[in-house]
Length: 124
Image (cartoon, helix red, strand yellow):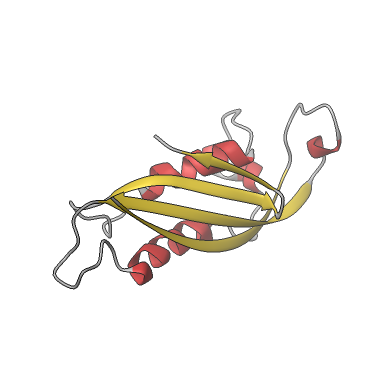
């Protein structure tokens, strides 16, 4: 089994509505997102997936979040707090539909770092 990982970043503000502390106030992060794809079959070039294509798909999703107030974006406007957990699940769901993921690989996990010391990983 092969696992390919790429990382990209975005900057955005959010607040965790109802949190009993300062995270209930508007604040921002420099988020880092890692996407992991796995599979067993390599293509004719000996690649599971082209790093460049996977990173481009991830960056396209993150561009929609970059420099935004996440609480105002559709995934988080129906009472879903933009926590690192919910952001990871959202990115996973959108990235899973990316055309760069062929029949020989699947999205394994998305990890979202909201600081250098704190992250969450979402897997289906």
